[in-house]
Image 1: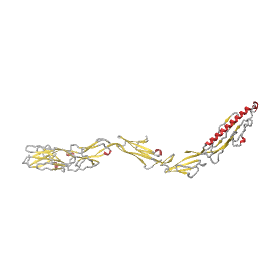
Image 2 (image 1 turned 180 degrees about the horizontal axis):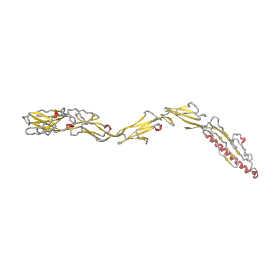
Image 3 (image 1 turned 45 degrees about the horizontal axis):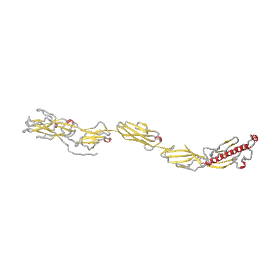
Image 4 (image 1 turned 90 degrees about the vertical axis):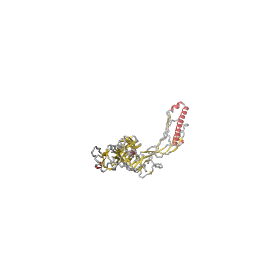
Length: 516
């Protein structure tokens, strides 16, 4: 703000006393007849007087009384209230000028000049006198000022000062304005403060007046106690503050759209990771509202699938072992028969650790070769049964009716081992009498190994039935538990018409896992 310094001599207000002219030349002239003076300022009352020639002036005086006849008014120069403040600048010729210093409202009245000559009848007093008005300065402001308004401050007096220049002060610092009115455009809280005014060149100024600018909350903020990192399990206090005039009347705390509280503080005891997020405080007074926010970042040790700060190291263990088997977020290993079991991952940051378990199960996957072998065997069985049925029908058609009746109840059971590879054991359906056979391939069961889980694989073929013969396909069964080892399945079967060649089925292993 620019300060303007103006120097000027202290103006003196001259009061020229105008009297009235009377016969013989007796008069007193006052000019002007009325003066408006600033409180504690100095005024000068100028006047002139005349009298007839031949008279000698013996005494002159100023008085606040107007008398008639031979009465004598009091002389203010002898009055205790005026004695130290008045100075007569006139003479005993024609000048009757008077100076009155440090005028106050008590000095507000009329003043008269009187002179006395050397004769008993040679006395005269100017009857019009000089009217003195004393005023103070007062800053006038609007009753209420709201931010954004245009405001005018006025340096007010009770009488009209003659051509003065004014100076304005804010908080004791002079402003650039020199007019009676100080205009403030679009006021804000920055315009609030103490204002006073003075007349340029006078030491006296008005009493200071506070310009109170009302405004909605602004510069709102949220503070966190205690400061620093927020650790899960601690107690946290959020405090909302803002600059507002009048002060904030209500507070509202929100997390997302949920209302949490209505005080300027919000306390979260035993804070957890679920309390992380953005918190908003709404400050309100009669002129508006303001939001402020803060983000809580709660630190916690690893748990479930998250940690804050992030996990610093991972360590892998296998159930039954005491030493780590690996490190890092990913653990890779070559699958073998001993790979089954529980694996534990321990995740750790500076606030703690958390472990999770993973179960590895090895399970054999049946390959396409196995299905081909099974299909071939089933086809052989169907062909076998079809051949037997066709041969029987042909022989029955060729035999006489009576022998056929005799042989009706003749049956023969032939059991063939699936593992037999001797072609001689095959039935020669063309050279023998027709027999009705039930062909049952031997069933093989692969036992579970003692040291570990066993792979269970089940292969079953369809069962063909007819009036005379039943063929049952060999079953290979694998007993399955939680963990599966490598499986090698060999399947062999023999039949009257053809034989199944033993095939070896080996398949890759599949890893199944579950996380707890």
